[in-house]
Amino acid sequence: MYARQALENAKKPAASGLKPGAQEFPALRANDSFRNPPPFEKPVGNLAGACSRRIDIQHRNVHEVFTKENLPPPACLHCTLAHPSPSWNPIAFFGVPMTISFRPASNLILKRLLLLCAMLGGQCSWAEDKWLQLALPGEELNQSDRAKKTRLSTWVAEQRWYALSVKEGVLAVEPVTATTEPDLISVTGENADRLLAGKPLARPAKPTGISLKAPVDALLLARIQLDSGGAQHLTPGRFQSYVAPDVMREGWLASADVDGQKWRFYTRHEKRPDGKLLAGSLEILADREMPRGASTVLLPPASGMAFTKQELLWLGDMNGDGQPDLLLKRTWVTGEIDFVLAITPMFASAYLDPDQPASYFSSGVEPESNLFVWNKRQPKPAAINFISKGSFSIDEENWRKLLDPSAPPPYQDEPAAPQSKLPPLQEAPSSSGDLLLLPITLTDRLFKLNGESIRFTLEHLPRANNQSRSSASNGIWGGSVLVKASFRGKSQVLMQAETPDSGSFGLSVGLIDGEPSIRIDHQPHYNNSFSQYWIYDKAGSRFRRLRIEHSQGC
Image 1 (spheres, one colour):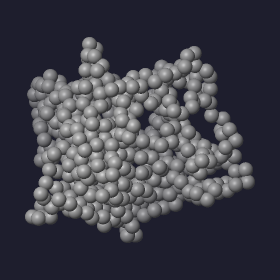
Image 2 (cartoon, one colour; image 1 turned 90 degrees about the vertical axis):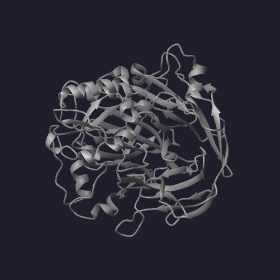
Image 3 (cartoon, rainbow, N blue to C red; image 1 turned 180 degrees about the vertical axis):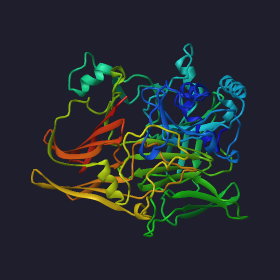
Image 4 (cartoon, helix red, strand yellow; image 1 turned 120 degrees about the vertical axis):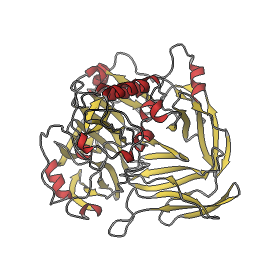
């Protein structure tokens, strides 16, 4: 049986070129949901109770296993498949909730239906569906679905990408078919490790792959992918906004005529117990004023996220269907940005880190898959010589106690086992009632760096937790705790930290090349640890994230 959320999100693997690998999982465990191999692991924290299996070195499929006695009621599901054993239920892919469940019946029927699914490329569950894809200018295109004999120009034209730009309340949409080199440079295996150690490469690294050559004023690239394999045509042109650009806030309201109909646009939100706006809860809605129709959610809440600003850049009708569409720019509390395009009822986001940090990934068991990526406009990465001048750390048990003194100690070495119900995809309020629904300061530390004071605070910020539908970006390792630094009269949020898992959170202040710098070592998952570096940017009067080093245990 396929739940509604599964139908909405099962198309994500196809959009990322991972559909064949993801489709292997149901058939592979049709008779034994706990089959090993392929090995599975037990996620912890927000995904405790699930099973995690690797699709490839960078991607995993996280799923829940229901016993026969704990199957969800058939009324909430869509299509029946047979399964005599515990059901297999993917609940997250790239941080997106997914649910697939099976009802007990004949194994022969199951095999026939799975074979039909394979023959139809999964169309039995989302036939002729479509979904919105976004990319940033300079982003490398995924060519996994390009046939070997297909010319590049032909393939790009068939992809039907469009550049979007906004100026003076007008959205310009124009097709893009010219290509250029992408903005990112990557090296793998031994070369990645040599760069990390500060050793020279045998030959200069250059960008590989292709990206679209977008107009200089383009904010985004967009396309609508059909599950049948093609792409939907969009009408090029210039589309006037119904309302003036504005900052989304509590009580925002606007109205406009849309194809002869009077529409009302407004925001809705939740509040914390102290009366303040709950982070991530704001949604944008629309309804017809005369006669009053049912409200349409243009953009749902961003569960688990927190922003300093949400700017409505444009609101109009992009595809001529008489339904409002919108383009939103959201600035995270960390300064990162995502753009959200909603072509009702579809929406998608594109992520941008203005710091453009270099990123290193180590698989732990397959050195040839180690990866170093950086922006070609940034200097080639070199070894970081961080000189610590002071530090502190908080382990998992103390972190949990600081968040909730009544919480039990973390469990250790618990084997993967079937669970009847998954916890929410973020930390839920504990037995202490509204404690986690209000801000909490976990710690406040003051250091001296070359005679100057630098202060660090760790502050829990409550977030909305709406799992039914969310416009949140896929920040898998983000958490509810803001790591703040105050230096030279200014304060900034460095990162949003998850509760440590079988490890600790450590922060060090020091110097890199004589400049004030920060290093944070964090283990948000027992099998994944991160070291991140920031260096003070005098021009911007802030710390700029320099590098992210991600190590995976297996």
